[in-house]
Each structure stands twice: as structure tokens, then as C-alpha cells.
Length: 112
Image 1 (spheres, rainbow, N blue to C red):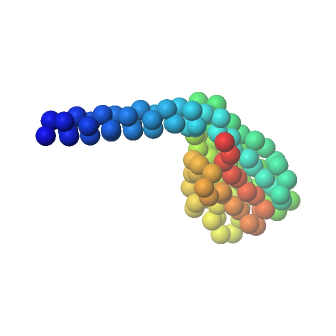
Image 2 (image 1 turned 45 degrees about the horizontal axis):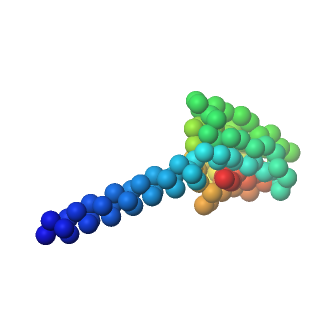
């Protein structure tokens, strides 16, 4: 009985150490958000360098989007598009789903 318990403790401890190592090697360090307008790179933002949230505005021929950068995340805070889908999407922290504003031809995606 005691041997099984020790085995499980060691196994979970090793898995936790492995997970921590992977996080430190491939975690949020070096995360960048690429901001595209009409398919062209508009700006690149280092998400790990943001100590405090800040905002910038992307102005295009089709309208404007106010983008907020926070440590490890990025989102569209406000826009003058009619449906505000980009605003409703909220902040993204990984590269799974990009932020897209179709009326303004704006795409924001996170890359490692």
C-alpha cells in the first residue's frame, strides 16, 4: 500500500516538474502579436514587454480600431465598425483564434 502511494507521488511530482520545465522553455516568453491591415503587416507588439496595459489606435481607410495591450494579452477595446464583433471577442492570450475585424480588414494574431 505504501509503495503504491509513493509511486503515485513520485509520478505526479515528475509530471509537475516536466510541465514547469516546458512552461519555462516555451511559455509566454517571446510572445508577439502581429497586427495586419488588408493582409499587410501593420505592427508587431511584444506581449511580454507590457508591464502595464496600454492602448494604440489603428486607423485605416475603412475605419479605426483601438487596441489594448496588457501583459500576455491583446484585444480590440473599441472600434467604429457597425457590428463590434472584434470588440465582443475579448482578449486573446494564445495563437489559437485571431481577432478579426472584417469591415476594417484588421487581423491580430499571436505568434511565438
